[in-house]
Amino acid sequence: MTGTSARRRAVRGRRPIALMLPAVCALAFLLIPLIGLLVRAPWRTLPERLFSAEVGQALRLSLISATLATCICLVLGIPLAWLLARAQLPGRGLIRALVTVPLVLPPVVGGVALLLVLGRRGLVGRYIYDWFGYSLPFTTAGVVVAEAFVAMPFLVISVEGALRAADTRFEEAAATLGASAWYTFRRVTLPSVLPGVVAGTVLCWARALGEFGATITFAGNFPGKTTTMPLAVYLALETDPDAAIVLSIVLLVVSVGVLISLRERWIRGAV
Image (tube, rainbow, N blue to C red; front, top):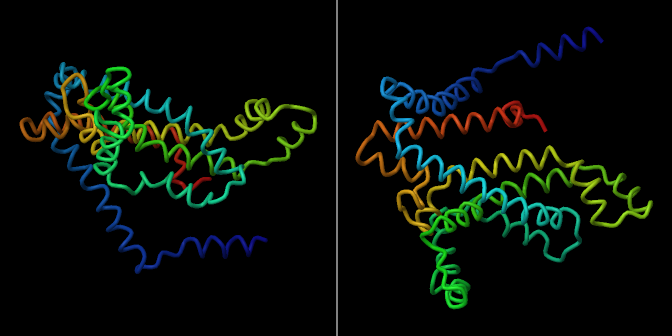
């Protein structure tokens, strides 16, 4: 056993130059822009800029809208993930592909699609406006809808994967003891996949917080109303680059915090 362990360590310790060189280049390619952001940051005026009214307004709106969007994704996405993982549906593969389309769809295209459906003259939006006198685009609610549309697939994929990996024997035992399907889902299924739900929720929230394309297309860019942090970065880059750097650092810190909260799930390759 000792010899086998030594050989395994020797194999793992080998570092082929043909792999190391491109790996180091890839690492530099990913890290140097972030380092450049930190190097160019206006550290002397950073506290003053962080507590400015513009940054506080954009950050507050971003946190609120991302949290509301995540709540919508939880209410709708968990049942959808269960449907994809457990229900025997015809065309389930096609449904799964359609659910994940926002992952690869350019966000601006998603914003245009939302505008055509939920706009004042859209397929659904016209009835909302006629019946309730309310137009969803270019409002704070529109920001929430745009962020939920883009972020929901992250939650669905994470929860579906957890459901597929979960041991179904406990659910079968609960059903044998007479538990209803809803009770079994609440008390057995959901607790068993809670780590996947938490991971998906954090990813969903982070994606909603960083959403730009669909938001600016569907909700516009109105300070205090629809200007989230990414939109504020875009605006500041044209007039005040230092403010754009400060806003970018805030989003960078949030992104790193998300990775840490996931306990290095993707960094270490843990499942």
